[in-house]
Image (cartoon, rainbow, N blue to C red; front, side, top):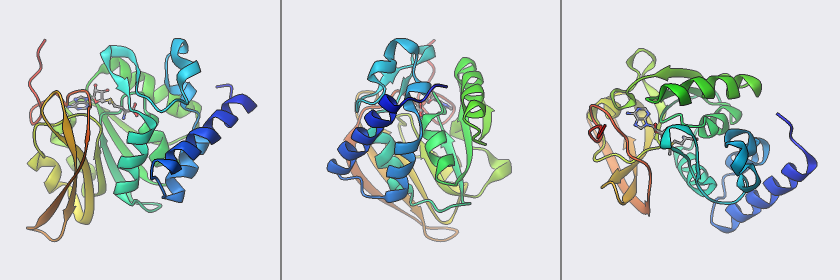
Length: 218
Ligand code: SAM
């Protein structure tokens, strides 16, 4: 994918904007400054790729707003080499940011077309991410526990299945609420039997559809 001087300049301005909006984690800002977001959106939207907004992708889904990506990633406090599970691969932009930060990323997507396109994009960028097609509300037990779990779609509750796949000391970032509006939850696993939960600001995500999410309307 072509990454020009103009793209780099636009990315630098996006990073500055995110800093103004309160993102301070250097590793997150560096990754956003490095990953070419214009390669994760459809051609018609590439001129808007470095604006701080969500954009449509295939299958009626969206690539999250850069601020949302930065906010969720910052909350994870992930260190190099740690395992992160993402539910909702979508365009694979969020997965690329985490991989660039040195995380070992596992990502699940329920839309077959998005899952296939994500694999091609990540390979083009030389980023290694383990991808799975299926219902992410059940997690990915074979590779658990995860130091971080990031859910990038709106959930009606925090699925037990995901709580149980968190490492002790691990963090989960998940938007919880109705289809119209959600609050970001930060869940921390204290020990085998205890978790804490902080409720943060409001967001609007596309729905998490699956066994422990919202029902499929189709
Ligand atoms: N992280 C994505 C990115 O960087 O482009 C944005 C994701 S988009 C806001 C939410 C994604 O969650 C959609 O692609 C949707 O198909 C997916 N999704 C919804 N329910 C899911 C489920 N149960 N398992 C896996 N993916 C799911």
